[in-house]
Image (cartoon, protein in one colour):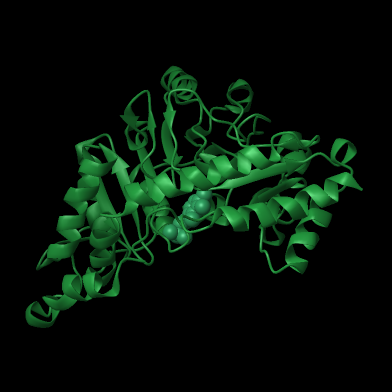
Length: 359
Ligand SMILES: *Cc1c(COP(=O)(O)O)cnc(C)c1O
């Protein structure tokens, strides 16, 4: 969180203007700041990351099947289903846990309309291959970039790939606006649709020509963003330090996969996922999770369960079609990761993990 006085200063003017929402000054100011920070041409701010994704998909006017992965947060799959589209699950690769591009084309049918890949943990998907496949088959690409705020690939802001990308500014993410999100998009025309979709389809005072939702980012959210954007580079620097502390202390342990450091990618160090291979490590992921929990350290089994095994989709999907995702989700654990985590705390966490490895 930013210094309290700074937030108060940022919101003070709202008591004079009485404009609390509806694309007010803060909203527009943050839109400009984020456009610059993310290095993208077009952006539309939303009330949260999920609505950003749901409306980004809706703006493409799609019908049929969408190729995506089950190794993600509920939001990705739900956004597809809530648009009346059918998710077709592609497996992930075992290196960076993003969509396995070698398996996409086998899943394409005459009903396929789009690909919704996820930059999991800030690991960037193979955007070059995905672009090629999409062009060859005439598919839209909407990236779930909720984890990839501020990242670049080959020096280009990550929001520039695909037809659109969505970001989440939820309190748990690298950059927050309390709750919030954004769509960055390539084609200027999407901007008109996104604006109408987030504001009831209202075009003018007497014209409503679109069945829109309400997904506007309000002024208090935007003010939080205006404060936090000043600190985000420093926060990412501190996260980088934590990341390397973990790497240093865990790198020699057998049976642990540590996060991949991708080439040509500027990372945001949002997460520190480890994968526990029980045969070589000696213990299962769940035992490591419990050992940490006993010391009041809350790691997360993130992403477990897979979205294609959710109760709400019972009987609809065959989890055997995504075996790598099954393997990883049963073994992955994301360790505590935030800017103010101290070296001593990382020591303590790693000591608990090392103790499990030894016996
Ligand atoms: C956080 C997240 C979202 C949704 O974001 P909200 O802002 O919480 O609605 C979508 N996809 C992924 C992968 C996320 O982690």
